[in-house]
Length: 460
Image (cartoon, rainbow, N blue to C red; front, side):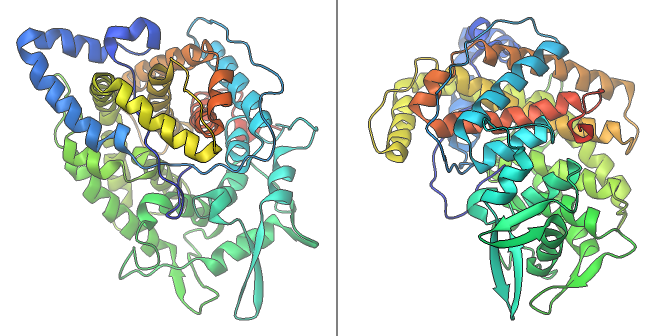
């Protein structure tokens, strides 16, 4: 779900080069661009790609923590080849999320299994995922003589990300939360979230310089649900007034300034400008969580400061990014292959420093990383857009619906293609790498299930 300022940083690449589209199983947009560029234009394209590589997906800061609690790889997950359709995409993604969540057995994989599969998901010992999370990772904090339960950033990474996921998954407010010998409930977590939250409407970054990038979307989802627009304010544990209207408005203003850097897409669409990539890669999952957060606040009734028009513009911006993100990922992966061994060595050094030993990454590293970054961008984008469609937040044009559906088919292809790799090799090499795959797949799984009967939020 994201990163915290104190965590270790590592580099990760993006989507597959189109000369290897058959291997990577990805859309052929980048391949067409390279072919159309011709021999004379290839040098210029490579220069753009290398610039994007340094500024974009390949150079982005890490978005996840990992705290394994069990030795993985007790049972293998044999790779399988499937045709690319919705049913097989769900099957392939459920296989990966459920298997590796049970193998890795940590907070971030667990919360994303809840995200994509729902409350019925259980671990190897038969315990429900919500019980495991709520009995293992919660903590207490005392402010002005009052004790509150919360989930530390070292586990949930984004403030209130566990809370908002529990709420969206339909977890009961009576759900027990255990900290040592002290017993709390989800209701107590809600009260603690409101008490511990700090926000200065005069400076959105006052209490955390990376608040908009790393924490705002999850706070928007949680607070717009527990503090509806007819009762949007409270006083926190520090005696400060919090008003969700201000949080929504100022947060959107900040994100709108980022979106403005993308520029026109042109015809045919162009990739993302390097200036935009430099900015958007500072946001968790390339800013995709922000779209969902603002859509969620709109769905929960917030309409401050022309909010309806502004969220519609966000939706149009997100749809325009569907193709442009793919083009940029293609370019960056092509650039990564140009410095391939150098890049792989960097990944290898990062993994070895975490595991305290030496191990060579699997030969398919860049191909799988390409799939992962495609799934991150498209999965998160479609999750936000399908959430808007599910709740009929605003009308989409037939052309926009067609574009969304087209990219959903591309996501199916990537998901079934990832299932054809032997990911156990990656787990043995670096469990954090597979943990990040689970995170990406959890969001993609929810994206393709939201509009169907298997919506994980409705699972019993």
